[in-house]
Image 1 (cartoon, rainbow, N blue to C red):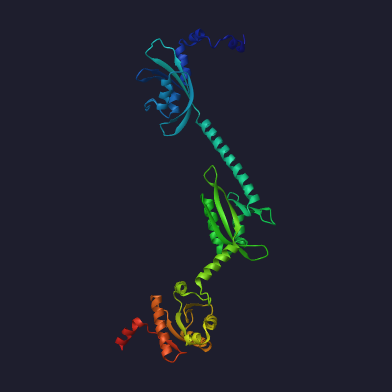
Image 2: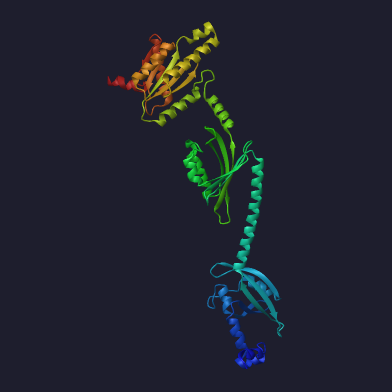
Length: 437
């Protein structure tokens, strides 16, 4: 008889033959159960407690335990055992190493002659990988649905919103533009965008750093915001644009892309700057108003603390008589002409303002005393006025400097008008100078 026929003749499910082969069926079952990779437990359920009759090695291993450190039966298993009926369910248990794992549990009650107790056989299989994979698949499906919806919204926006939509992909450093302009409905992709935007004048150099910082920040973490900047246009020149942007985060928690919209706000910015300018300047002369000119002068000095500055107080001579004789309309034309003359002579490196009525003030930068005196003389030749000049002293309040120059201007008028008074000793130091003499 060959070997195959031998196995065919042997009935492996014949308990009598198994007993004869191993002497004891219990030894066979014990051997099989103890070497199974599936956790097996036999429990005795009484009215007030659950006793463990048997747990195989795999049962301990699945829970990260051993016979020596096995604690109380986990609550989730106790609930299953207490049910005392055929049951199949998936439960989550925290292992001894605090790792949460999923298990497929099957229970079967065993017939027992003792009515006071119940025996329950529990088989427990680790299905953590399966459950995690299912959860990942569900998350991927959810993300896919979101991306499909987002993609659909993106295309709707691209077709309906006037302007430019963009999406930046940091993984491949690529920027995709979708244009919806009256004469431009195309899409355009720029690869190597980080390098491209630095080498090409897309964004004005004054705004390039802020533009780059905003994009880098949006790539590093989930964020949203808006940015105004000058961008180059075809045909030359720049126009103001505003970009609205938002980071899109992937399943791994990292930013997958940065999406947004760009709109032309050139007219809006020009109007805003016009209103801001109008709020700062005197309506008649176009010079800074007195509420603004002190702020501008203070900023002027802060930007160049080591430069040489001189403060000039200019007051028109006999202006009241001009108004009384020729009328306010003619007087206004005199003021406008005087403002233009002062501004023209003082040139760009000066701050010039109308302090009120027929009074003007100016702050020169990096011009020596002799040059300031010359400029004041040129103004007097063209405009009947008196001028008081003082050096800008570090640490001295601007209102004190103004009062000092104002005193000098009145001293010039007392000397016959059409004069210049340059007093280098500040009023607060005059007493000290007299004591020294």
